[in-house]
Image (cartoon, rainbow, N blue to C red):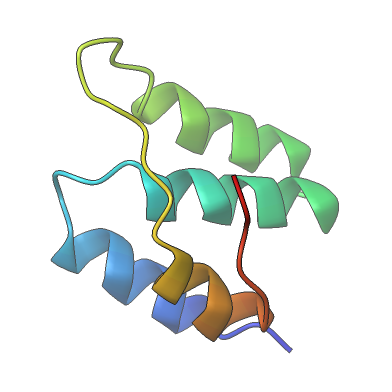
Length: 68
């Protein structure tokens, strides 16, 4: 089970990193919260900020890492 508080804490603690919020939005969408996921994405839709994904965060939340 995903710890939603961990999502929120990481988002709050890393304000310059869009990755955690976008990962949470993906998770929300996959779990049926499509409208809230879209609202969260829209809040981070700033083209000047790079989108990053921290493999450590992904591993902690989901138990795997992404390979590019």
